[in-house]
Length: 102
Image 1 (cartoon, rainbow, N blue to C red):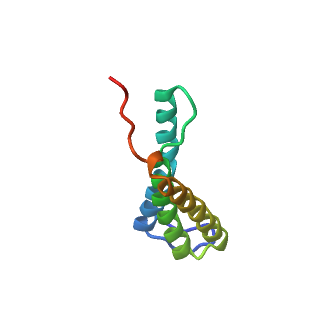
Image 2 (cartoon, rainbow, N blue to C red):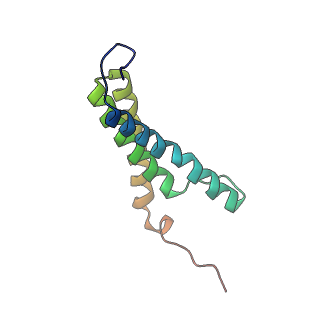
């Protein structure tokens, strides 16, 4: 198997890249399910965890492939995802599960 430039790439690297893409894509499924349950648009905290997991995996893949466009794109995204988690955890009351009145 080879990339568009004719460089050989192993199947393990391809599987690793697809794993990163699957993690990254799963965040949309998580967000969709959470929004459907609440009947409004929400971004659950797991969305950001999947974003970071997928972003880190894809960044590692991009670094291995020496793709500067992909590296900059994933690096910038990771900054945004991390910053959002920082804002969430800065206000612990947003993280705590609120019990519904009985």
